[in-house]
Image: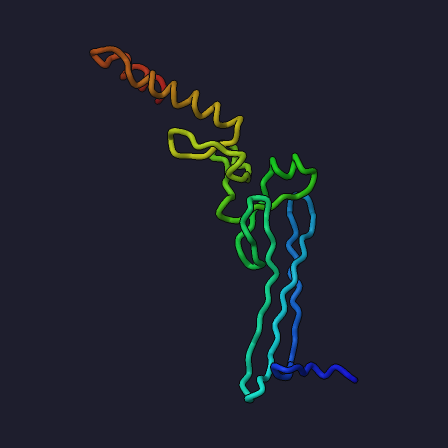
Length: 152
């Protein structure tokens, strides 16, 4: 008995499989995902299009489907020895050095930005020096002089 694409629900008129390849620019590693689209004629003559997309669970714990935002975490990739992706909602760029990271590898600073471990210490140090420089003496002259020297 030959398979003509018919079953109890109707007749399959067409089926297309789409392969999407995502290439990591940094490492050259290739991630492949597939999706399919079928056009089925129902028993009553109606046409129905069925699309199926592959879903994956990323390191961040969120489900990802092809076409959605995806980012690479440098530190997760370094620890795992392979390219590690996180969803667009969990991806963060360090405000200090611009490295793409996940939420696990960044810390929020009092200024509202997120930093990697190395830049976080620098940001805290810089915030402390800005606070102490702005205090000055009771007359405010030291603050004015220090602001002038920073400007210079």
